[in-house]
Length: 495
Image (cartoon, rainbow, N blue to C red; front, side, top):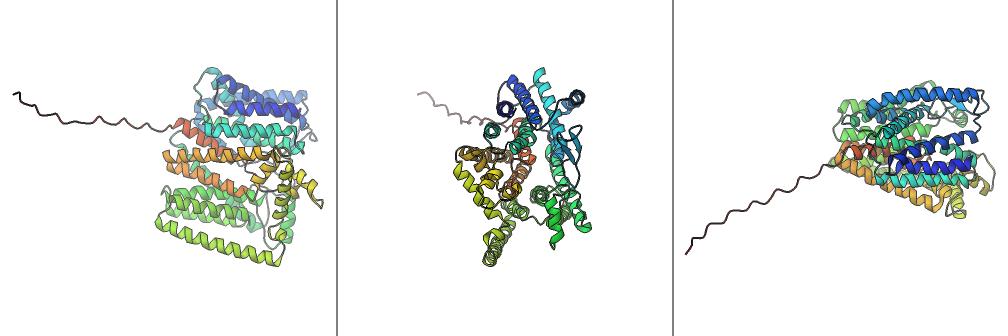
């Protein structure tokens, strides 16, 4: 099953993303759906009569919702933006009677709200293709590198060292996110969407921060991982998770809201007092995450936004502050290294990076396959430990280890294509372009110390929004130059 799923997934992501005929788009959506079904079957899904009946009933409901969505296609983007961060506390597996059950012990489930939006949007898109409605193509600078990277990741399931983890990444993240770019990138972009997206980004970050502050005050977590619960019991500080299961993931989402608000402040798109209150709320919530990777991402993004959109005094203050922060950070790091080992000073990150680099050195061309890096690092370690202790938490290294040089080049191509597309958006709509670029930069910086760049739906949502804007808001053609006006020559009298 995994072999068929890998091939169908690779074909599907290419067909739904690259410019082509309607039949390719329809075939790609069918291929992705078939790959998802095969992956679910490989994961233990049994197609009983009850489950098939439930699937048919669900398809009817999705079709009805798709009919409504076709009347207001501009809702695709805001619905995806609202649904993207949320995970319902549900657990899936063949050990449950109906394959699904409520999770216990503070665990979170999958991105079910986003999957619902994607399913309805994909049906609406397929409906439009069948009825002959005009469908734009995803811009090449986003479509081609994304399709190539996702196809390689899908095919790498054929040689991965951890089929279970690879299947999980494809089924719940990469294949759905290919559909995310396809449906959002073709969704209509209206003039009010930039303001709506800004409100969503800041509003969600404020909500997450508020919940985090309440958790810090009560010392009670809504969702959490078991190791965090143990850590909070034996440390002097209490890390919060808000509506997530990991403090760093929570911190990442708060940073995204701060980044968007910073752009709005510099471009004078929001009242200063309101912005100050929201900034204080989000910063307080971020503080209690105690996420160093989130602090670093926030610092880099605020510096970049100030240098690009700030005034002269703001740039000077940002430059001085950044220099001071760098000096202090180097001093603190040097002090830690002098009094302890590099491994302890980096919270075990140095060991993980070293092992991941060895995995890449042993498999330089195509890597160990999607999801295989932790297990491959575990095999190379001198001391055995739980699998989660070998996750590199560094996206470029993870890509190099799992997909080799080819995957690393495609990763760079995605970054280059995204930079080009976001710059094109900025030149046509400064606030939207800078906000999307700030969010993308925050995700990139955060992923250098905490994995999850390609597993975060916001990464692909940014690419989809940029695509939608570029295909629905083309650059205005410059008017042709006015013909030169020549003075009439004076008549020469005949002699």
